[in-house]
Image 1 (spheres, rainbow, N blue to C red):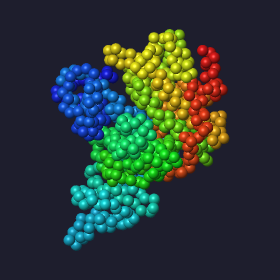
Image 2: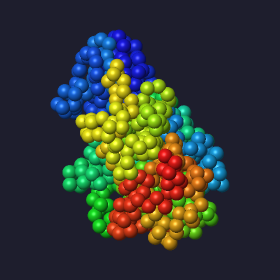
Image 3: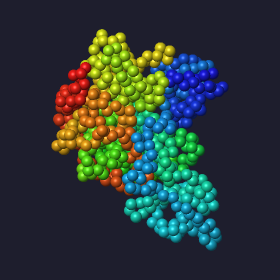
Image 4: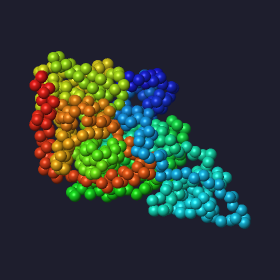
Length: 628
């Protein structure tokens, strides 16, 4: 029997094998925090053709079941079967697209002039065995040995003491003490482990995005990135943006649903790491979390309600060094979890991490930092000052809210060219092969190409009757980019999609011009523009300028940095010095609240057109339009 996927992979099935196991055996991972037991309801797939024995439907709704959705772990094919994996179900492990532009991050770490020096330390100890004559308690015996080693300032939590006795005896009194160096002259003991067991030293760096979650498994001794995992943030089922999730958490009573959703996403990735690398969870000594302010609050189960209410005050900006067990992470429960500090309600640790990764805070040149994601955060400044703001761009550039949208991963259309005579498209697909959807960079290419070719006007409306590719779809007028009748697959951009994209790009550009205007600068003063965000790896600068999302300036001023949130998280995981530096960045940044700025609304309305109502701000695009 064959299991065929709509992405064209073919897997030979074993007798009685369920879809989840067959996919996993072939290196295709699904989000399944329960490990494939049918409890979490996350490993959803859609049966397109063929029959199967559905052994449980778990938490699926009647509507989902009627549409062919089923749980992969409880679906055993009874013959050849064609299955579609929804984008939110796929767990990507080893996805190098998730890596930052600087692939060798260990070398990048050294470029800061710091050594690998994580907060979490290990100390080898050999305690004398207790006797009738030497009959002090286990803890006193440990303290005595530590004093002899010069560590008389150690603190011990109940969580440490609970597991101490068994480990000391199991390891024959030869142990590794894992502790965290304190800033108040006290060190804290985290846990003990045997010298023969849990010998590897790993940490996890985590980026909790509104749309996606990325995790690095890092060797704490060498700085090597052992593996990379990513998945869609399961909180998306409760809302695409932070505001709808805050409403669900507060008015809908779903705070802990949201917390459990993202924690289980991280754990699914961590569990895959442990299995793939034959490791133990106790070998993961530390974690660093980077996310926007709302994501950080939801991860720790903190009420985010005041974030969306004037005067927009979060519960915390600076987080204590809490334990993994408090968060429910599938690593040693005593491992410390560092959370990168927020600046304000709508500028979080992800942007602070991005500024650290860009090094703009160390340089004298005036630079602009743009994280083009769901929230569209911006920072401007240099080594003397930093100012920041956030504008709600929405999740469309990350694939959400766009009918055929997807992440910038294999199968995504990343580039589009449209012949101005025939209006026929030429597509570039990540990884080659047939497209599965269109990612952010592909959308920007598509909109700018359609505009230059005259397929859409400056308002983003289709010019009807121009080509058969412009048709009336279920959601209104649309342009068809790709069709495969055999696989029942169509990829199109609708007028509603384009409207969403124009709103998002307008918010980003208006945020830039408003922030610069606030400090009395114009775009001419900006010497460098750092672009961060998941789809920045594939972004075509020229097309983004034509669309009116990026300022019209020379291409050499733009620098792509990829996912700077995860880069900053990685740097903080490995260096005490950079942890202190990132806290200094957070305290140095001045926040501008755009939601109450009249200037921002004026700039936003002007930027809702292609490329802008004021073509004088886009002289390069004006020249192109004259030629066409």
